Length: 266
Ligand SMILES: [Zn+2]
Ligand SMILES: [Zn+2]
Image (cartoon, rainbow, N blue to C red; front, side, top):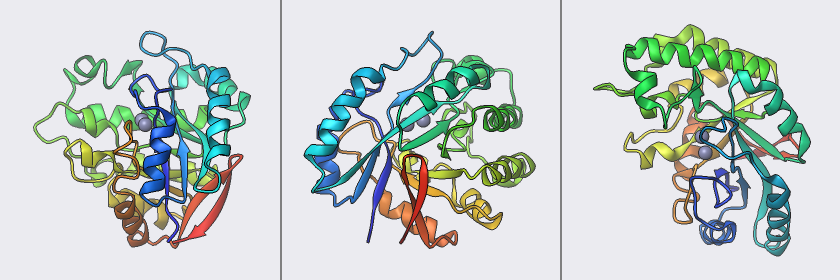
């Protein structure tokens, strides 16, 4: 069966030290047919350097060519979406010849959920913190136009500082449905991110109920990604993600060529 890991970080991401080639070798060993490198492009210069794609693309292209008989490698990116940077993000995503773009919420109310975890969550109930996150997601979807799938849609629950950080879809149904409907209208999808298995939540981001709801509303574009930052985690739980995707009613996985979706039966 065809399998692809569509969310991988290499040493071109600020939070990974793994050379691209090590990740490719690991993915080949694990029998992947295709992978997408989706190194970070976040735009808040307090935390992140401006992405240097001038040096990235040549390295990528050489490796793509070197391994072309073993695995198909596509040029992706994970952009941190914040509507205040929408002009810069739109310009960046159009500037390079990406095959595939993940748009993710890493920051809310200008606060990075990882670096500013305390500042964002303290003084807010879980309901408030999670509601604001989805309200901003909706704005991001309307202003940051050029991404293919929304990354780890319920990511806010990774950093919550509550006794129980889990996110119950029903409690945010209206907002989440609005996000999903807007994505569908725009021809955009969601990803099933398996990094939760490494963060001790034993579940995917988002969980099955949100994946099912996207399908139920007519969504067709779906990818699976490990969000790996090391060679050993590449392709982690991709088989599991594919099972969930089928359980949610999909018969196809989406791959991208120059940002155009293609569908492969799974
Ligand atoms: Zn991310
Ligand atoms: Zn990532």
